[in-house]
Image (cartoon, rainbow, N blue to C red; front, side):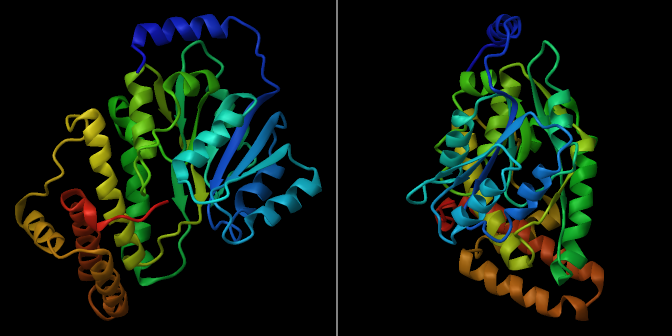
Length: 333
């Protein structure tokens, strides 16, 4: 990890030299099973106002002929587009690092395969990287959800609250929102050694990177103008709870690396906390699937507030189960 004064000196030297990169920006898109959604970012990137950028799609084991989808865009010759295909599943972190390391650009932008950027997406990210100080730039998701019980009683409300919380978050905590719509300089990425490959399971490789950027002295910026449509994968209570279980387990890797001080205690308190902890004792991948589906089935037949509370309970208890019983969440990504 770089000390803040060392990082500042290093960046000052580099920024005083002419760029040796071919492009101003590189957009890295990691994907696995993304054949049906890669059109979201690739179509949008064809419409960018900024033209000086490359796109690198990294396929983490091609299970649905995603390579053919990307190849069709390559043949259209509207993007400076290249592709990396892993022979087998190596994980999201490996895909991210491969794309970032292959980039020939000053600024590296992570854009997940289910995002649909606005036409000024590249230009807006680049606008933050013109000063002397190193920055990490975050765009918050705007989740696009189908009309499911989960979306009606929980998903849309939580999505809006998530953005409100992010925009009101103090500068010392903004690193926690580092996710799939972010950018940093290539120099800083290389100095930090890339994403940590210990995050082989689902989640927290992004929060870990945000924290390391912050600890290294980079300024973290959440830009509301970079809020980007996100065709979210978790569209039911069952799928959202399963991801919460995986994410809770991955949180332990962060704590092992950085300690628990940065995050605070995960233990929920009060009457609600007691309910969450009690349900967590029984929460497994199988259980949250069946209970989540059952809640979605009855959600339209009960008071909306009760439906929201039941969905919250299954999601939060799954997350706490992942933290306290990480062996229950072993899915690789």
